[in-house]
Length: 66
Length: 343
Image (cartoon, rainbow over all chains, first blue to last red; front, top):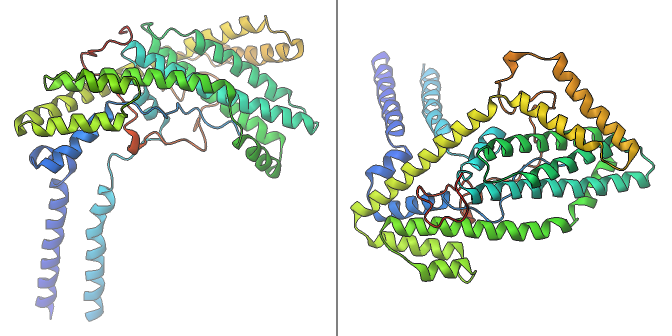
């Protein structure tokens, strides 16, 4: 029973570590430079272009008077 | 024993969810942080037209609050509530509005000026809000909120149209820069955008489509250039904001002295005297709290005697509007269209 428990904990730890490593590696920046698929480029490009443009409805926020 | 195993499994599963919680949207909007918001706002101020836009937007926000404050004061006067304290703050807000109108967008210190004046606007708004809360109860407050919610600010309508025009001009320069990135000139579409027959979204789609037609290497180069440019702009904005923290207390003192001088010309003697007393009190506090170590502090936390703290308080309008494009626009590196004189 003890051996089985240890084996189970080991397997779970392994899965957990794998999950952690996956999350550390697969962040957005890595995706955007490594994945050269057209969809990723389009979305990335669109976001980049947006960040260079101004929205006509934007307001400088100084807080509400009331 | 079996129970322990089950418990262990549950804990392990819960633990495995932790990274998900922390990984959630690292680039979430930073509206809760006024300093971060100001940093984004000054990113476009390296060219004259960007500075002009920000100063006009600040002026519009101040005018909106002035009109609302006037309405509130009128309403309280009807209820025979003494509003002198509010009227004095309103008077100072009006002096501040004049300072924003007089600010030169092409000046070398336009960013510092914008940051300082915005800071004052936030503080005076907060001062008014806090004083108002001390004068009336919650139910009257709700009534006032309803009353000013449906108010249309007449003075800001013309200003809004002017801001839209400037933003269109700014975005036109940016679009020219995008086309130049892949060695194309698309004056037809740019002109259509400029005269309003093509939307920002349509022009952006056109550019995205053109870039997608290029080879992967070109696409990669373009995105890399845009990212590099964005990082440079962010660093520059960061440095500008850091520069504004130096000598902020002395600048506030100067602004107050200037306001005190201008308040001598006001017509309403009672309010004029109250305002002069209020400003003088603030200036006196500088004398009392004269501590050189304080002078290079955080821009939003150490500008002299004003009420800082959370600054804006409630009801912040969102910075981003994903559907209509980003807010923190930066000028392209070469600012091909010109538009306004560079700082």
